[in-house]
Length: 301
Length: 305
Image (tube, rainbow over all chains, first blue to last red; front, side):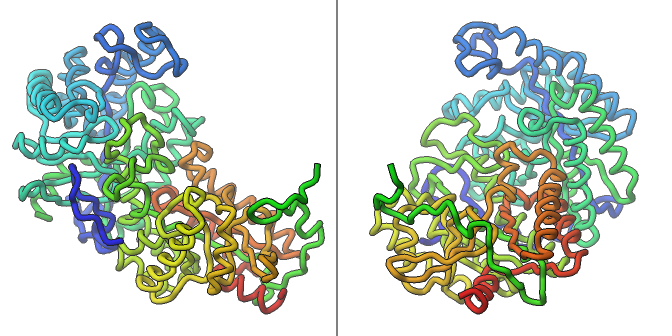
């Protein structure tokens, strides 16, 4: 069985990548590791009966009657934008680190002061969709339209259009082509397959992918993490190994955060402990994804 | 009702060594044999691009996120790619750093798709046994198909790694035909399609003596995908506790400890660090043998035939 030629829609699979020989990266300031804190700003744009969706997000039981509002779940989401957001923003200020917001356009429209604060406090904004939605369920034309609407909306709520994109969970077979076609994106993050950015080609156009992580991610508070320390431990262990590898081959570490999850006080404390720990070492760069992309364009084009 | 009525597949054995396992003396008088096992699957899992009806969407960081049937799940594909692109090299580096050897349960097609990595496995001193032609559920194959897949796997692994495999391990579990086919083929020394003991044991297949070296899906990083293991520390603790108990038993009755690893799971830095911590811990004791399964098989043929 030979390697699959790309006879199907969507990106060609690449199970080889850098083939054990990643580029020798020198992050700005000689840093040994680039840490990309990522805050997913979704709350207010999730599936909701009040927005005309047949059902809300998965809440109490899988067989929750269609059309019946789950007010408890709506409220749990609201925690994110009402309380979690401000807690995380304060922690980042306190520890003087910058992050990237994967922001759903409609969510920002519904919390305009918060939206202004993001760039106001020096954080980056990448589009996380028009709404927090499964783009695989849109047709190609509808997806193109949603990209256009997301760009316009985020430009309006944050002052600048987004130059990065990340879908909810995963892209459709059209997403990357549409982003490259649109012409104004520098990179996308719809990949989980490496510890460094990499170039790809879309119909002859060079395009940057900055991978993300569902492993170093607070979503595990919804499955296997009990104590806030579990997430803190994961991050510290991740850092320890990457920092060691960074002696010779610096890499990047993405950390996925959700305001309604890690924004809870106890879990935020765990995140705080980790950031403090990482900052205690020399050569640690808390980077926005835009900065990482810029570095890649400048040094690894 | 007895369990003596013949049905296809191996006869069940609930008794095993009956509380009297052989007194094992591992090479160098080791009190414990630790078999690190790396499952090399990525690139051979179900994929739309390979003509399968669906993407493999389990056994990774976000299993079975709702997705339309028949659509490529690019997130799942990408999470698998992490294993062969990044996780593999990290594990190889850690094994080099700590100077330990492992056994790769390699799916033939996965190695075909990452040839430099395939060559590195034996080059760095690790063992390779077959984990199937693709990472597939062999119970879905007919006997003829399964025989054919075994033959293809052997030929492929010989081509990508330089030697044919002499061990076999299915995805999760064998069919009722697997062991017979493996013995019939004639070139296998053992299979690992068992979870039922802490030591290798002999069985008989149509009168022929055949070695089984049990594996372990409990001391296994699969727990990270199943939501059973939380932070990396929990895996490290499981391994340490396993080791502590087996090392103690090894004072008089040495056993073996299998550790199941997946490049897309433990290959992430946080978990790889925990694995490295465990290996360093085990190595700090005298009488600890990090063995390839081929070596364990060899020892059994020579000392417990």
